Structure formats: C-alpha cells, structure tokens
Image (cartoon, rainbow, N blue to C red; front, side, top):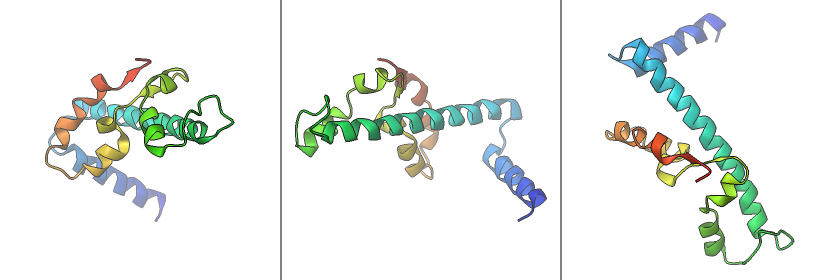
Amino acid sequence: MTSQEMNKTLWEAADKLRAQMDAAEYKHLVLGLIFLKYVSDSFDERRLEVAKLLADPASDLFFTDDPAEQAKALEDRDYYSSANVFWVPQEARWETLRNQAKQPTIDRHGETVPSSSEPGR
C-alpha cells in the first residue's frame, strides 16, 4: 500500500466514523479516545507490575499465594496512585470498551469514562 493509498484509507475511515457529526465536535471525540487509550495503557502497564509484585514472595507487596486474593488486591487504587497512574474502573478500560464497540449502546459507555477515571483517588 502506498502512502497516498494509506492516507486515502485513513480519511475514508475517519469520515465513516464521523458520519453526520460536525468536524469541530469530532475532534473532541477523537482526542478523548486518544487520552482514554493512553490512560488505559498506562493502567495496564502498572497492573502487570503490581501483579508480578503481588505474586513474588520476595516483594514487599506479597501477602498471599491465593490468586483470588491477588486479583482482588489488583483493584486497590493505592497501587496506581502511588505511581501517578490514573485509576481506570473495569467498565472504562480500553479492552472492555473495545469488546463492546459493536454494541448499540456503546455511546452511553463513553459518557461515564471521564468521571470514573480518577487520578489518585
């Protein structure tokens, strides 16, 4: 695929996504999605780090061998805020939204994301 073909394909995809929405409104939607993706990726990175620490008996965070308890501990906001990472609730995480992208109610999911993703709370 040439650069021109790629450019054309991306513009067509953007137009399809935008549908009847005004371009001025569309930019807010796109910037919000880019921010959500960044926050979600940062959260996922930190989650993997914490999971390793919770499972490592040599770690200060280790407290049990029970995978269910470790999974519960992964939802503790303090592990994320201590590393200056936004807490992202399950329903606002990128993978959750991506898996629901074809649902007819996906537009209502996005309305709750900014208020439920909180830094350091």
